[in-house]
Image (tube, rainbow, N blue to C red; front, side, top):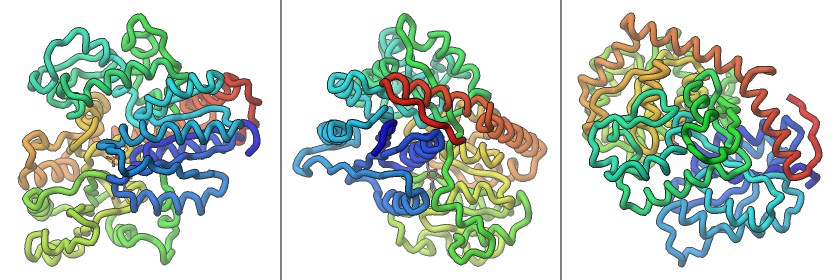
Length: 472
Ligand code: UDP
């Protein structure tokens, strides 16, 4: 490997891996070499990840993947963070055997590594990749400060609005991620340490664009989220979304094209509402599946619904209402487990997206100019809901998500509202306008393009590396 090798260490879960791989491709275009380290967590569903890596490797021979061996299975690693901690020696080994590494980009969940790496090689710049929004970054950076002000847990504050500098609207305490809802929990304590560490890095790379989140970025730049501390530079290089493994699907007439896309070809423009709930969750209990099915059926709308039962090979007929397939034939398609989401959203027939508000899903929808119905489920998705609904105004909230069971009449009404009402049309027009801003950010001279150039300059000069030749 020559000089200027960037080592990326993503969390091997689709929502983190996918944008980091796309970031790797941007680095390649800047004339750098890229190695992506993979450490799998045994408790994740690793099948889509393995096939994703195979597809990406086949399509991008310049991206080099290197699998780190897992820590011994005899050691208990209840979460991926623990699992990663145990693997820090493997990361150190890799870096000491590969002295050409110019910079390291870590998933922000791997914050533990930064102190070890700084000690091992203080000349190696260490960046964090933050795969969710700049608004969330603003809120999380402020968390260690808020912690000192508050004496109660978010879980005990109900719907009390919590103000974070830079977060565009107050966040109801109920909508804070479960992991940090209880201040006495180990997860909460770990997150406080984690967000205290981020400013110490050489920079934070955010998958967003400046025109989407001006308030958050201004607050971070003004030091409002990290009072009294020196803050690492922020590089907003997004939206980086992936079509890998999906590109071939776009080739009309291709045998390999996913059947969901072929089905969409036969639907009128903008007529289909797409429902998909992420790569990890969305495995609804049967009662919820029935409510969705009834709501979709009564809405009269065309739909494509990715259903995740408890297993990929589950027989969906058995969990759907009797005769559902027959009654919705021609206007509805149920896809078992996995659809090529980015390609589906980019299909002209899709006119709305019911989403769990994972940030990648939100960005893919933004890139496609598709308005959303926000049904957040886990992680920071409720915070994303606040941003998408209250600030960007390109999503409407699915009522009932807070009660644990969304009723069929709520599904019916919301889907109809988005697809038929004048309010829905206005929201679609706003989503189309945001799409144009996203495109402008990524174009040469756009804000994300410029942030990428600045970051590459900073990371290749910080460690004394050569300036690469850009090829954008
Ligand atoms: N995804 C997909 N097909 C599916 C489910 C998910 O292609 O059936 C992709 C989706 O396009 C996105 C990623 O998986 O790129 C999910 O990331 P996100 O941040 O939205 O949610 P997470 O899965 O991390 O909760």
